[in-house]
Structure formats: C-alpha cells, structure tokens
Image 1 (cartoon, rainbow, N blue to C red):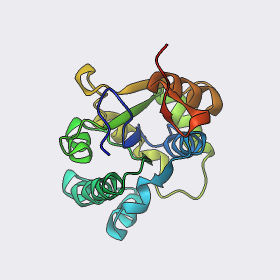
Image 2 (cartoon, rainbow, N blue to C red; image 1 turned 30 degrees about the vertical axis):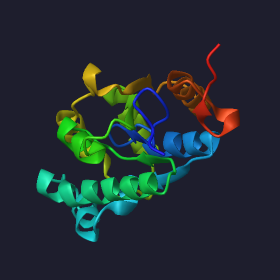
Image 3 (cartoon, rainbow, N blue to C red; image 1 turned 60 degrees about the vertical axis):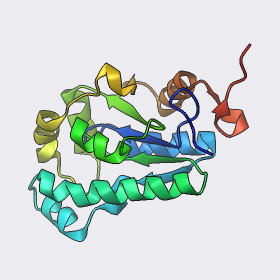
Image 4 (cartoon, one colour; image 1 turned 135 degrees about the vertical axis):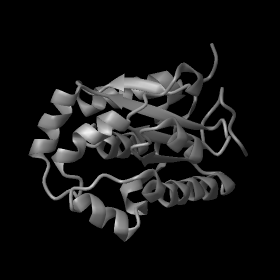
Length: 185
C-alpha cells in the first residue's frame, strides 16, 4: 500500500555532505524504526569510487547512473510494500528529483553542519574513499532543500541519539511501533 506525503514515507533519504554523519544517522534511524538500511555509497560504480579515491570530484554525468540505481532500489522496496532509509549525499535538487521520481512518499533528512565541524570529522575518519580535500567541492555543490521539498533539516552538533529522536518527532511516528504514524489524539 502506498504512503502519502502526509503519512508514512516509503523511503527516507538521509542527505548531506561527506562527513555529516549520513551513514551513522541513517543506520541508527533504521534500527530505531525497524526499517531497512542501505548505504548509497554501495550503489556507486567502481569507476566513481576510483575517481573519488584519486581525489577527483564526480561530475553530474558520473552521478546519474548512481542516483538511478538508488531510485530503482527505492522503487523495488515500494513495490514490495516496505520502507527503507538510505544514506545518500543528494547535494543538488536535481539529484533529489531523480531519487524522488515524482513521488511524494520519498522524504529527505538534511544533516546540516558547518564546514569547520565536518572538516574536523573528516580528519578523524579512516578507510573511506572520500578524501577530506573534496569537502570544499561538496559544499560548493550543496543546494540545501527548499521549503517546497518538505525535507527535515537537523543540525549535526548533537549526539546520534538526539538527532535520531528529533527526526522521529518530526516524522510523527512511533519508534516503538515499527515506525508507524502516531495515533491522533
């Protein structure tokens, strides 16, 4: 059964620049809601990973197949009547439009942080293909979601549990009830 924009989304895309905590927050949120978690990085073709590992930012042409692969997976989950949370940078509105594919039940959670905070996090991160030197290009590319996109924006300068709790409150769902909408009073 499809979810409406006012009801439960079939997919939440946790978005933001590299180092904003997308995978950590998305995984914790999925666990909290008992929804499926996918890391968008797993959908990158090998050529994209190699390019970023070499310190080169991706072009839009590089991103389209990656975004379409994620959108295809969202469609499969929707078709099966499930729910998923995916960590994906989704930095531009055009990228979010590809992921959304005109559907109102795909919502975005924007992890908002300062370049300084995120640079500090990236400097501590090990074994990731995205080098800290590309952070400036990510902020240059970033188009924060507009009000018409009905995204949930959360600051990232809090503990993971507090960020997840803020998202759950904004969704008006019950974490204890598998992410179902709360009953009206």
